[in-house]
Length: 196
Image 1 (cartoon, rainbow, N blue to C red):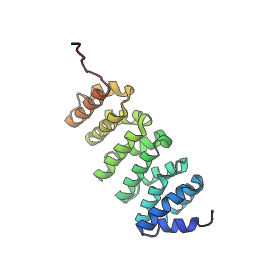
Image 2 (cartoon, rainbow, N blue to C red):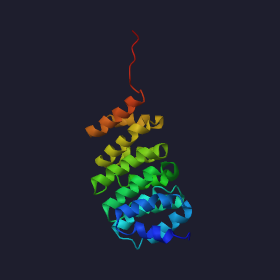
Image 3 (cartoon, rainbow, N blue to C red):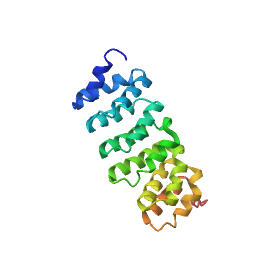
Image 4 (cartoon, one colour):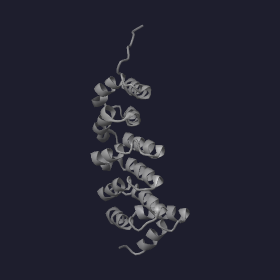
């Protein structure tokens, strides 16, 4: 382990937010794989505040280990930790892929509405990798999952999603219909252009 790294990990677990925030960029400047592996090893012993800071730090470390640990953290008993892990996966969007999209979609109906909304935002940030998962959720999910899936599809503007979004215009939930229409309009689908 790099000298001084233990002090930085202690700062993350200290309960002192200012000290922890100062440690994050220093850890992010170190060997990403080494730091991510060490944070994953410390996860079990950490309290909820420490787990939150682990997720916060992992968001700055674009490694597969970071993504795997954050996916695991989506099942944390603390909703703030789950929300931070989801947000971190969104930050690592280019790194996470389909596995993270599936894990995030599983929390679109989380008992915490905040966690569920952050998962939808993270799915939108993941973009094209999330589209197959979002389409399955849009088709098979419970209403709240369908709403969040349709909402996440809006900024992605995936042409692959057009048939499912057109089908969602007939959804029994008006909010799903609203987001489906919004997504389609952003892609120019269904618009009629008149020449003067």
